[in-house]
Image 1 (cartoon, rainbow, N blue to C red):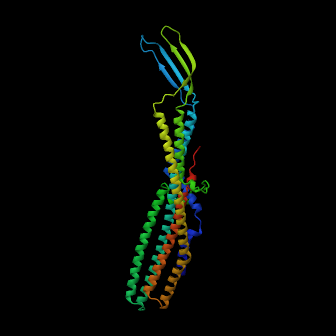
Image 2 (tube, rainbow, N blue to C red; image 1 turned 30 degrees about the horizontal axis):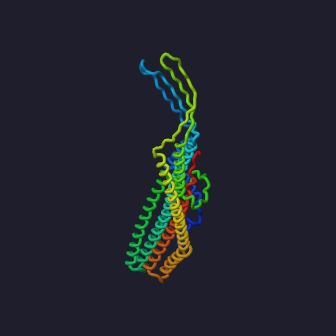
Image 3 (cartoon, rainbow, N blue to C red; image 1 turned 120 degrees about the vertical axis):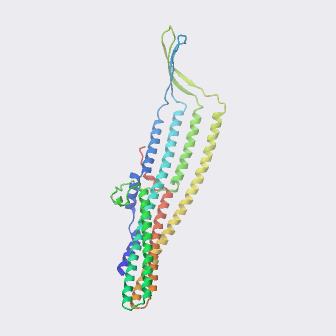
Length: 400
């Protein structure tokens, strides 16, 4: 009997004695390597990175060709115009491409942050559901042993037959309880496998867990804050692009003309664009862009306030969950185990009735399950806190 309860105690505290940092690294490495959404996020960011690099190139030249189509035509003309973008258009285009890349990266990091957090939550859910199922299996074996002892005592005439009926009822109740907990563990396993990208959870120990070190984020690094800050940068880059369209620019031209009966006349020259005429479209666009910047600044401030509030709330939930788990592990669980052991000894010595023993066993089993659930809630609260902080976003690796 003592061996059984010692085994239950080891199961109950194993989740806190051992740090799961190595297994967490294996979960993260599995998701990054095998999950299709993680691969898609890397491809999206790589696409934006290529667009950002392409923005550094000069604007493509304009080629104008007017061939002679009939005998009465005026001739043939070929014109190649290359803008030099000395009005800041190229610089504005580079800033806009960089802003688009920053926004895409922030959004991808936010999605990966949620993806990894969900995978870790599924891992801890399965870990503790499996332990709760193991507790139920041990409780079923204990109920079977109790029923067998009562049966022998009834056959020996020491106990009444109603005690055997009560023991059989309790055994069946515990069996149904164990089946329910096994089903919950199986569901948690399926959810974990889906969160891992279809990889079986049994392969976690074989995964290469060499992942980048996790940085300690600040509240300003929350994924939602990064996204809103990137959108503000994008709006500012957009207004620079609009302003560049109203600045004169210089270009080079190569012109080749040939008229009927005359020789071909090539020429090289400069062109000057003078976008001084504006019917109001450009000015209204600038005003609209400025309003969007001011609005985005408001969104950013509101998001920062909400992110800070969410982080503080997550910290409080994690602290409360930790205190509850420690109270169960150090105070409530030992007393429940002592109660069950005392009831077993009292039954054998005749000081306790069978109903008192069964009630003590139910209490111990319930407390054991509540202890594991409290520890699971603690782990989930810690993962949710890191998710709010954006701690998992650093695992997105792209070629910049």
